[in-house]
Length: 550
Image (cartoon, rainbow, N blue to C red):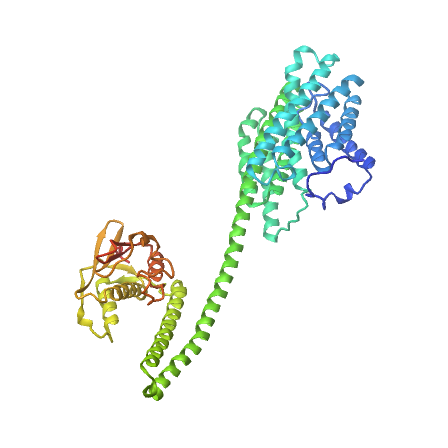
C-alpha cells in the first residue's frame, strides 16, 4: 500500500484516471514510461552508452514523485535499472546507476515540497528559482556522481573520460528537470483554461514563429559554426509567450523549442564529428535550462500581476456597488428624515402661533428648544448630503478669482445676520486658482462660518483672509480672533464630527471642516489649523497654482 499521499489535491482531476489504478499497476505504468523515455534518450549517447546530454526521465521521475508521493520510488528504480541493463554495463553497474537516478528524484521531490511550494512551485518567481536551484542543479549532481562512479568502478568508463561523462550526464539531467518537469506539473494542476478565438490565432502565430526561429538557429539555414551564436534569437518568442499566455503555455513553448533544437541539431550534426555533435548537444541543456527558468519566471510574474489586477478590479467593483448602495441609503435616510423633522417644525410653529399666549415662560423656552433642535437636525442632514456628494460635484475646473470668492462667501453668511457690521472682515489680494468655483466657494463658506460662530461675544470681531503664492502651491489662510481651540487637537479638527469649542458649544454638525478637507484634497491640496487656545485660530489650506493656459 501507499504510505504517503501528495500534500494537496492539486492536479487530482487531471490524474484521476491514473490514480484510480491499483498501486502495482500504477508503479508498472510509471516504470514503463520511464523505460521508454530513457531508451529514446540513450540513442543520443555519444561519449558513453549510459551518458546522454538529453535525459527526459529526470523530469518524469520528479513529477511522478510530486504527484504520487515518495513511495513511488520503486517504479523509478525499476525503470532506470531496465534502461541501463538493456543498454550497457553489468547488473551491478546498472543497479548503481538506477540507485543514483532514484535518489536524485527522491531528493529533488523532497526539496521542492519542503522549500519550493511543491506542485505550486511555478506560481511565484521565488519558488521557481528555488526549484531550479534545488531540483535542477543540486539534486541532479547525485545521479551524475553516483552513476559515473558506478560505471567507472565497473570499468565501463575509462578514467580519462570521467570528466566529460559526468558533465554530459549532469547537464542532461538538468535539462530534463527544468524543461520536462514544469510542463508535466503545470498540465496536471487541475485547472482548466479556455482560449478565445483571438488567443488561439495568436498561439498559432507564435508556434509558426518559434518553428521559423528554430529552423534558422538550429536547422539547415545556417552553417554549423554560425548556429549557436544566434541562439539569442529564440528569446523574443519566449518573452512573447510569457507575457501573453499563462505559465502552462510558457512551459509548453519551452518544450517545443527544446524538441526542435534537439531534432535539428541531431539532424544537422550527422555530417560532423561525434565529439562536435556531443559538444553541441551538451550546450543545449544550458541554453534550454536558462530559457526555461527565465520564461517561467516572467510568466509567473505576469500571471501574479494579472491575479492582482483581477483582485483590484473585483474589489473596486464591490466597493463601487457598496458606495452606490450607501449613497442611495444616505439619500433615502435624508429624504425620509426630513419629513418627520419638517412636520415637527411645522407643529412647533402652529403651537407657537395658536397657543403661544397660553404658554408660560418655561413652555415658550422649551418650544424654542424644539425648534432649534429640529433646525440643527435639518442642518446636519444638509451637511451629510454635501459630505457624501462632494466627489460628484464640480468635475469641471476653471480659473477662479479666490479674492472675489471669499468676499462672496462672507456676504452670503451676513445675509439675515442681526449685526453684520460688528464683524470686521478683510480680504487681501489672493492668488488665483484653477478648480471648481462651487466647491471652493463652499470651502470659504464653511471656514468663514466657523470663524463667525467662534467670534461671537467678542467686542472687536475680526476675520481676515490672506494668501501667498509660494512655488509649487498657493497657500490661503482664514484668521479670526475668536476663542480658538486646544492646540493638541489641531491634527483632529478636519475629521468628521469634530467640534472646536468647549463642552457648552453643541451648535454645528461637526462636518464643516471635514467637507473643507475633502474638497481641498480633491483639488490636490493640504489642510491644517493653528491656535494657541486663547487668541483665535488660523485655518490654512493649499491649492496647486494656476498654470498658464489652463
